[in-house]
Image (cartoon, rainbow, N blue to C red; front, side, top):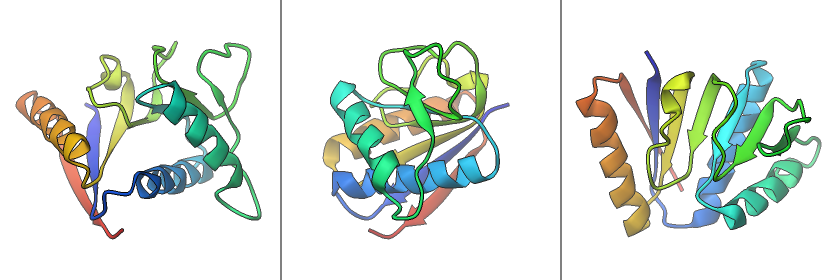
Length: 142
């Protein structure tokens, strides 16, 4: 059964949320796992694409767009695509629960203090809880 981890940030700064995604992506990549990052929209996908190239001074995280079916990167980004297959980890940044989440061994939900992000996170939490998925919580600083 898919394990769901909620990462709760004590800030409303959108960039902090995306930096957490980059740190998690770095960890997943370091473990040799496949990662799909489901973003809210095209703008967030583009912003995260830039961050994954530049968030560390000494390296980058190899990634590609989910709509590029020829790319074999271990990290894929998409906002309106359904991944062709499941994988190890899904990071969800969209306000809704992706219908394909159960194809992954683990889901990471990143929730910050923005009222709309927090409310959507609570809705997703209830969704997973009501269906019996194992839930973990991680309180992070800003």
